[in-house]
Length: 227
Image (cartoon, rainbow, N blue to C red; front, side, top):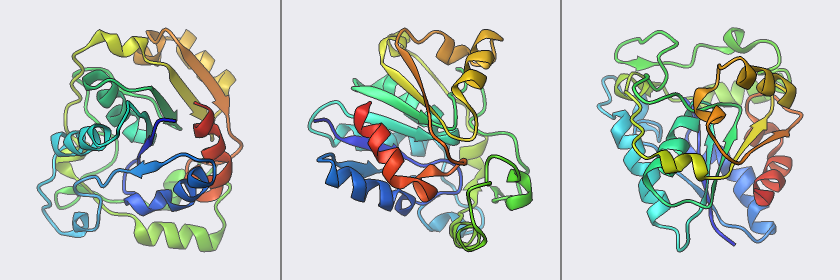
């Protein structure tokens, strides 16, 4: 079976995948968390120079390190990193968790304020509702304490997509804080242009908030193992 490359979204260090990789190993799969430049501790340093290209290179290096084309998983904003990997390399498939890829020429994550050269975690009030409904106070505190400000060069970097063969890659959109029906409505409305062109798109429900690798690692691993 192919490896599973795991790319975390904004502010997340690679150890956020520990529960998932443990469960994947039990299922006979190897999870490969990606250490994204600017999101492995040094991102807390003011003026971190990491760029989106650096994160793309890290994702591609993880794919290249697999013996066979892997499943590439992108969480939240990192759906775009997973999609870029499918654009640049042969992959077995792509799984997107709570996020969708932006189109060529768009900014990676230009939707929160930049402070002193980085995009800090804005706090839980920004995620009240379905996003954080399954996070208890202790988990919120622990997760927030581990969040790493995303360097400006990453957040405001421009996504570049080159190869339309990416639309032939099987894609699974895992729907945590939103439902498959909501995703279908967004597709019908033209709000998800990259996914609308995918030839083999599967929508899967997961009853969780925005961070299922933290709150539902076993269930998430089981879904990834089927992709």
